[in-house]
Length: 467
Image (cartoon, rainbow, N blue to C red; front, side):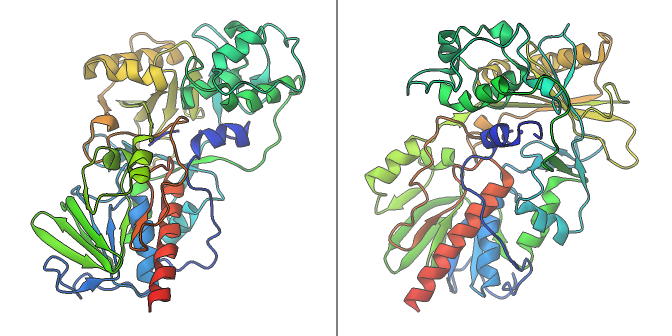
């Protein structure tokens, strides 16, 4: 999920995707550690006081639980779903290969996810070629070239460096003020709209750096290779969770209704059972907390509750189409056509051993995603097929299997991930040294896991201080 992306303009486009908790250094991390056996304590009967109760078995919750277990703490994870992973959901039954309904990519080769890939001996496929075009009749442009930054109607005469936008100015208003028409947008600007909100909505501050980069770009040639890339885990993303969950007590189908807390500890109530703990790590999506699905006793401070209300999710559309044989070039990993709806297609099957078909993902965000999600499912499939037909140049194409999933209607997430308007500051501060927070506003798998590690570190510090 999520989403969202690549190598040509790594710092700017990448920042759109990797919002939320920043990276941290994970030196010498032990993944298997000395976790308590799942048979060692009767979690359901509350026969023991847990050092930490983790609510949510997504990447953030499991990231926290792993750290706590490695520190020899008694930890239990309560998960409302009948599976782990949260918005990482590898579907192994719908198509000829495992497909990702949520988060799909590892964004960069320097993120903490690689420890999990290496721990599991997993194979990955790096995206090698991404292409864009202005419209269905336009020429394809390799996103790894400076041509990606070219103004199609000529470089505009504007102040250089660019003036600061006002606090309320949208990207569209800012570009109009500079006299830059949409027909003269570089492809490197249009790519922002397919990863975030469209320019009618997104604040100008989110694209000024990209516009400046286009103004300063060289006239031709390849971009320097900085080593950054996007990777898929062959055989399913969920495999990276194996070293996180090993030996940890995880209670599935356990939906928490209430958390009672004092400075001495917590009582977590779910399905008629109670778990007693010295601390709790809440690793739930912001939409669930915003929705008030858990009652806190005493109520949370007003500023914290107000903070949850300020979490704003980005609409995301992700469709999956399976074809009997490859229908777009196998060497093209990402294809973006900016007048199409959905505008983005990527290859989700390249590198899959012994697979002769092709699975393509269709993608949109912001208002474009809203428009698609309002359609009946068969019309969403048709819209995605139309984009693929335009790329393939074959109006007679038909898919074998198709599927979409609307995360905003998933009762356990109520959204894909927070967008550019969402509040992120101050929401993860511990409460009374017994309630700790992870995930919530993260938008990538690695930033979610990192936030869990940070929360676990806070718990361990408090437990040590109280010892």
